[in-house]
Image 1 (cartoon, one colour):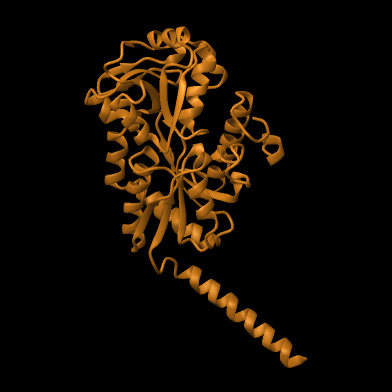
Image 2 (tube, one colour; image 1 turned 135 degrees about the vertical axis):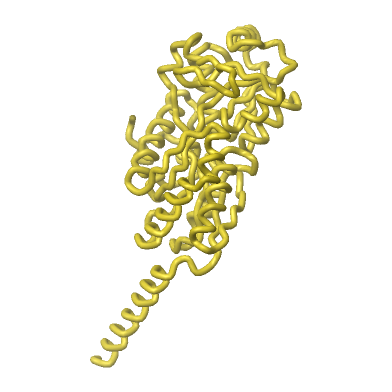
Length: 334
């Protein structure tokens, strides 16, 4: 019996030592960032720039792999969550992922993750240049006269862009024919080709297309106007004050690690993340692409996503656009 007890103790000590050593030497091999949205969108772009800078700091490659699909990016999120909590699998996500639960795609609260928030950019309503809509009022009045006929593109159901489109409808009385896409880039491409007439994505994602005359911006979905390349984009709130009942909703683009990962691994990632956001390469990129940088991590990041989860879930429920009652998931009202 004593020999068996000694063997168990020795085995436990070896296992603990191995875990501690593995954590202390992290990272020893390449890291994978599973991105839940499609290539070319804001979440993809932000993650690729930051991962490139973090890779230099950590001394390993960080491979960004797009795994799209599902409500609120649930395909990629479920896959990343199924991987070991060893810091070698990250999940590139955004605030839109907090709706995965009420959309029926993720059976857990978002507090199973710990977040690294890069930042975000306000949403803008734009149209295909050959449409007759020169102002937001022109678009809304046309949508009121022909409910459900004007096709509007945005990323997947439950995303921030879809939520903003729903809020625009509710606050203005218009009704669009919502066409979901796997990410912002496909939605914008659809607007440029005329597959849809309207697109709702962020200023950062549309900036180059707007500057190139491929999209015509009508209004930003925040209370203040926004200056883009010398042009002032009006606030949709000016014409439709009821939008304040649902907006603004801020982007929170970044990545996450499973909350039960070892603290020392989280500390290594936090240090590399903070340093990456201060590099000249990232600072210039953020300025050129109209991103407001956050840098929130740890408890601060979790608190931000908890609030977003509450706001998004219950807003979708109130707009009758959710499949699952947030209360059944334990999501508190905002």
